[in-house]
Image 1 (cartoon, one colour):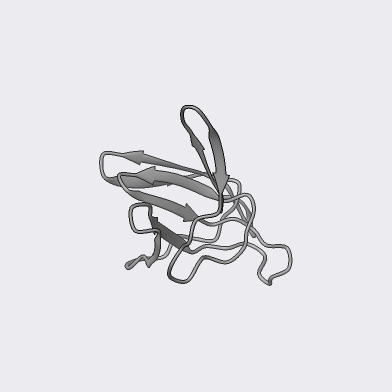
Image 2: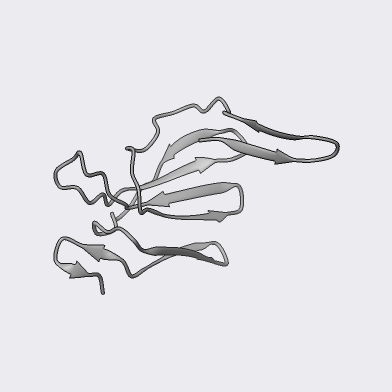
Length: 102
């Protein structure tokens, strides 16, 4: 992960120090920010079997610490959308091993 700070008089790109266990490498994942948290869900990693990922990870942007998300696990999916509504994360669409997600 890299952060680009846009300010006056300079613009700086840096790799922050992050604590905790990062999620598995992936592409075609969904992400959304809710308050001080960045949520990453699903995606695909063609080097894994199954190659579609279903886990949900959260990064606290104030402490830069990865957190475990408790509760039900979303279905495996990639190429989908995450959006925030009030204090909730909504997961929509995408593809899974059987085709399009409902």
